[in-house]
Image (tube, rainbow, N blue to C red; front, side):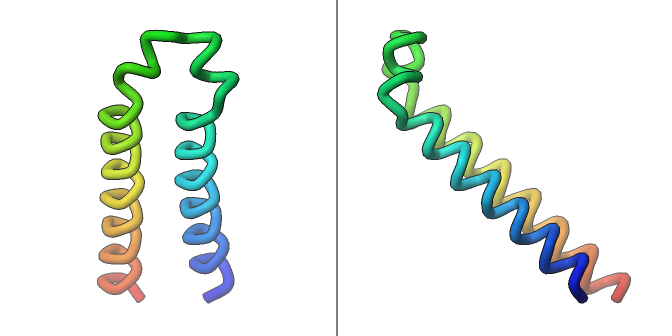
Length: 64
């Protein structure tokens, strides 16, 4: 059970870190084009994390 909790926690931390980086002022300065697509990029990354988490939970339920 502990490994599952660790994997889920890491996925959540990665998702939060991705959003924080995407919204950071430093990122906006270094790549001005990213600013114009921030919502689209964050939405895509968030969807990717949610799909990965759903797949992990499905595999966990099937094989546990």
